[in-house]
Length: 370
Image (tube, rainbow, N blue to C red; front, side):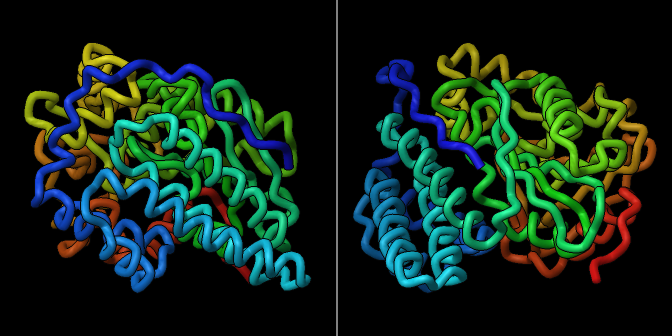
């Protein structure tokens, strides 16, 4: 496993961006509650989440509160590692990575701090895997970075790419990676352009299939996994990226989309989303142009392989047309609808994740785990 990239030394000047909505008194409790299922679905302890967020007086304090929680776990991890308690150290480093990642969920004006938190998350995850899965390997190129993990006892396994979304990164979806590994599939949890550790040095890429193509090339050269059996699971905006890849990249055998956007309407999006996209893209014009590209209408007929669309019935975001439409328009699509699920279905993991992992495993031709 290799070292960790550093934040960009020259982040774009976005002082023009109006983030006054962060000061709205009703937004703090709404943001905390809206992100509670996402945080717990990502593996944060729900009681700790309550303790950390209860102390917030403003959303401006969110990033530092999350980083402080990450540093507490980092201290515990260092202590456990020094005492030879390998599993405890790995679990604490993993918890630190989750908290550092959570610090970046907000379109906060301090983008340098957000870049630092992403690097902290990446480094904490490296240290976690060194203790919990020493065989994990860094696979990276100019437009992607991720951790390749292989299932125990499976020779030359197929591989699934776990693709994050707008404000997400590879440290968020531990449960997804774990479910696939347990079923005999290797996993590359990745950051692409504008995501995770690469957010400070790149903008989101609507032609994400080019990124996925380079990832598959890198995995083929790397060896140890079967790149004739590649699956992709994309979450939130990552669902659009996954469909783009499936429509253009013939090496993808099966695709799953979780809470993906079928289409975005810029003028109807809430300020939280437009501000986040503007920060990630660099200018309002670039963000608007990117949002206009997020449209699966022309892609759906081209996704000729197996496709699973996972949707939550309570997932309603202004300006976002949900991907359940895709299930009617792609040739070989299936819909898994969880009526009580919210965005990313962190409040309903048991209702979709085992079924989705089984579905993807079967399409990749993987025997179930031991």
